[in-house]
Structure formats: C-alpha cells, structure tokens
Length: 175
Image (cartoon, rainbow, N blue to C red):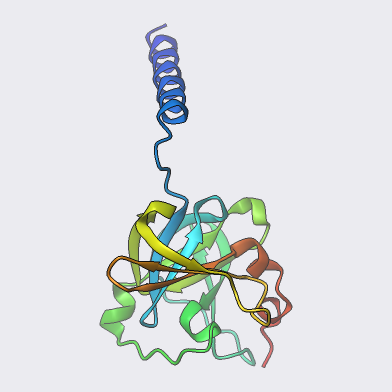
C-alpha cells in the first residue's frame, strides 16, 4: 500500500514538473557533450544509451584501426569503436588516459550493439549554450549535423547516432 502511494506521488510530481517546464519554456538539454581526440561533439540524448567505464576489448583480427574489438558490457556483447579515430583523427592514448575514458553505447532503440570510446564526458548541453550555428557542408557525411560555437569560442560538432548506426562506413569493419 505504501509503495503504491509513493509511486503515485512520484508520478504526480513528474507530471507537475513536465507541465511547469512546458508553461515556463524551460530550456531542456538535448545533447550529451563529449570530447574525443581533442574534438568536441554533441550526441543527441534520445539516441545515446548507457555509459560505461573503459573495458579492455577482445581484439578482432583483420578489422579497421578504429574498430577496437568487442567487449561484454553488462552481459551483452558490444563492438567498440574509437570515435576520434573513426572520424579521421590519430589519437595517441596512454593506458592511464584509456582508464579515464568512457564507453557510450547507442540507445537500444537503434538496434545496434556498439559503444563509442570517448575521452571525456562533459555534461549536458542545450541550444541556449551556444551563440551560433552552421549547417553541415553539402558534402558532409550524413551523420554530421550542425556545428555550434559556444561563448568561449569552442566548436562543437553534432553527431546523429541514428544516422551513424546505419552508415555503411561504420558498419563495414573489415580491413
């Protein structure tokens, strides 16, 4: 009985907060901000999944350099991709830097068991955190969204994880 009342109270509080956010037009965070290979990226929250600490992957032979291998994360097998390397960077990471890095899995709704290696998680960002935006170039990969500039002059590249999960170059890991 007490559990039902607590659940009902929680649901009421959540409903009230959602209504208040609509009424006050509160800025809602829409991206997870990460750093990888010295570059800054914005990943849509609805497309991002769980975050894990670095786990040493099982290497897979004859794959591209950005494909790190596979790892068991919470009982599921995930392919591990070095985001910076996939996007053309050449990050050099020490064992200490890897130990401080994170793995971000794709949302289960995207139906791809993949995790991206990122150097740092930088929190949540909303559109109000930026002073300008540029549309992607006409020849940009389909998973690259707008580029945003914050007040400190940092450039942030939006990555559409749903588009990335369907991109042939991401799905083709053989060397």
